[in-house]
Length: 386
Image 1 (cartoon, rainbow, N blue to C red):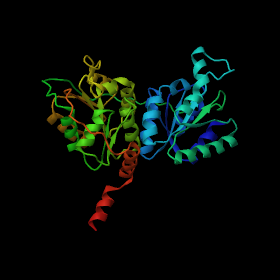
Image 2 (cartoon, one colour):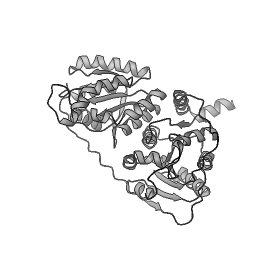
Image 3 (cartoon, rainbow, N blue to C red):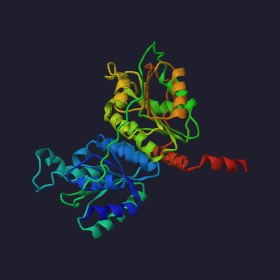
Image 4 (tube, rainbow, N blue to C red):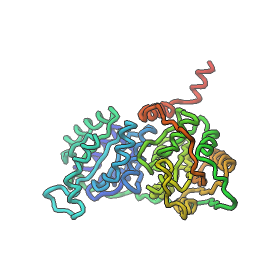
């Protein structure tokens, strides 16, 4: 079917934000998304799901596109982010390795199990029709599932979309402007002390995103706020999630709080963040050289220069922070000057004893964050004061 006409139907239903990883079966739909919509090229499919999920929370009806081999990469966020938070996405996944259709050997098994995987993940799906009129009806059905806070995926067979030339080349170059390396001893505060400092400088326009494990749990104990999100799975996705929220909510200050084990799992996200370069995002890495939430096993971060890596990926500022006062000063300066910023701080392995877990459910966290985003603080103050 004609790709542009199908894309117009997506727009009519409000789907304007796309993220994905290329596949030859989907190339024409991806080209259309780049030409006509907001498209974020992710480093991998799991990152694409996280980016699009955050954009949905930020008010965008979102689409993810991927080859079925990449569906395996997206399993973690689909099962531990979208499912517990009840974040709906419209997905398009190709059917490489379709039984009876000659293809490369690496697609053989995935071609047999693609739809079974979607079933196992409780993701509603259909084979996308090559007939536009039938596809329109399918899109309406999919949109109804999205309205119920459930993801819906179309499985796309070879030859579904007509040729769509790529007209708009993405060519964004962002160079690091400030890099500051270690120059004195590190204070090595606890994660709890670091989070308390980060939380102390937030304002009414700030959204705080805490990575999986004890980072989110400790932030919850410090202050459970409407503008907090505690990741409960999808390890490594918090930076990509921050990108999606920053792009969809440019008037908000997005504070991403990451850990070394988490970032190591999906370091390609740094390149994506640097490329799209949202000025309203600060990425704070608290590095204790350990998977501390799961028993204190060492990570492989000991010899990694995260500051240089972030700088080379295009973060506007990349700064080694030595102590809590520097952390506070850097966050305050970022709020004034903006620019995509990476703050790296070494912390101790100590954790708070008898650490609680959030009593609020993930989907409730999502819903109250959506309400926070949708509210107008100025109008709220006027109502309260009248």
